[in-house]
Length: 190
Picture 1: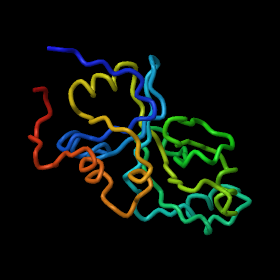
Picture 2 (picture 1 turned 60 degrees about the horizontal axis):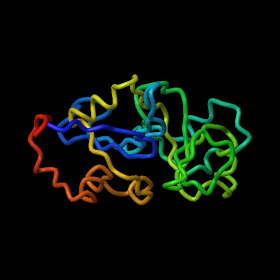
Picture 3 (picture 1 turned 180 degrees about the vertical axis):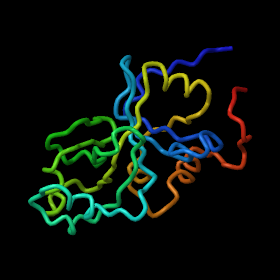
């Protein structure tokens, strides 16, 4: 059997296998991998929203010099780690104070109040998702999960990431030519 190696996954999308991780935040999730290295990995789930929480309510708790009611953004859950921390996954033409930018796919991540002010003024990124929390993997953990078919690897697609009007998980599988009903309910290796 050939052993598969997973080199740099930074900038890739992970699609949860259909029957994997049922009953938790990772079930049917899509994750944008922000960092993958020997020290572990970090990603942002971008297809799960937090119900009944508006960005306006979140930012009333901090002193912003912006009318947060002008921010027309849903709140997404990025993962179970540091839920009090907010991130913006956005298109790469906006380049102020970035945490991460992928040159290959024109996507970036920010985490500061300046981007909020710019969005409210209409000078922020063209496409933006607001995400609380993130997903973290210990060194080797992501590779283990990939080897055990818990995730399907995909190239990033801005239309998929920022199109919140559709079931993004179903669309991600469809774009790869995968029919959800073709999966057996137990992950494994062929």
